Picture 1 (cartoon, rainbow, N blue to C red):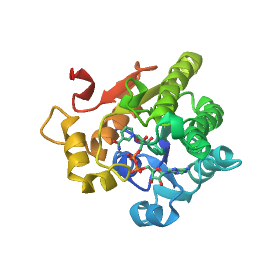
Picture 2 (picture 1 turned 90 degrees about the horizontal axis):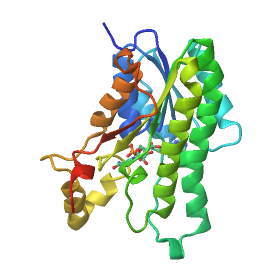
Picture 3 (picture 1 turned 90 degrees about the vertical axis):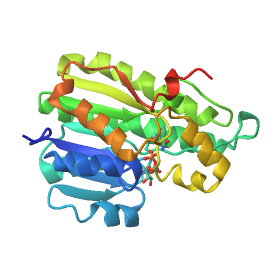
Picture 4 (picture 1 turned 45 degrees about the horizontal axis):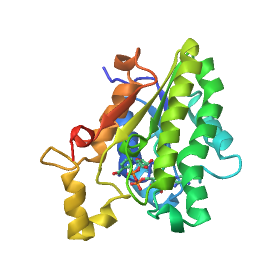
Length: 249
Ligand SMILES: NC(=O)c1ccc[n+]([C@@H]2O[C@H](COP(=O)([O-])OP(=O)(O)OC[C@H]3O[C@@H](n4cnc5c(N)ncnc54)[C@H](O)[C@@H]3O)[C@@H](O)[C@H]2O)c1
């Protein structure tokens, strides 16, 4: 039996990386999925031909009224909402002393503020269904950081705090809220960095396993958190990092 039979999901950041892998895995496990991304062309190319159960919506999650429009589109297309998987994210490496205000604001807007409004708008729809699942992608940078990551790490620590609070507030509604801390994963965000051999070697060294993390590794964690197997798990940060955080430098 498929693990997400009759479930309705929204996946943001669906045109690449972890979001795209989640759309495909959730749909293969029986869910109806609204795939959302700002990159309309790539979204259509990657998720446009996946059958009746996957609908695409090109949208900037930070746009005015975006949360209402996105949740409304899922409810309009499929009749409700059970699962919200927030993957859309950006990173722009700059040390704090020279960071452009635009970088700080955009990182916060995409990685944290828009996520909050999507979660907020999803709550009444999940209550109508008698429960739900919120799965927010944070990062190992919700735990540790590095130079150049002030905005990114602040946003990801924020994701952890937001998600834990949602878990506490929404437990009585049978809505779980969990976040995932990916390590170095080969996606649209990291692929361009792999052209530089030193950076490639650095990213590969983050994993204690022979291989680097792949988007499907994160999608499988998200599927677990969305499934009945995770019914008693909430307020949890699931680290999927190939052992990175366990390693003493
Ligand atoms: N790749 C990694 O190593 C890594 C590690 C830890 C955490 N993460 C996090 O994982 C999440 C997914 O990233 P990924 O690695 O799959 O990156 P990715 O770049 O492959 O995918 C992110 C997607 O988000 C979309 N997006 C960006 N801004 C948007 C907006 N305003 N509105 C709608 N869509 C938007 C992009 O178009 C892109 O398709 C992010 O939150 C990222 O911070 C990534």
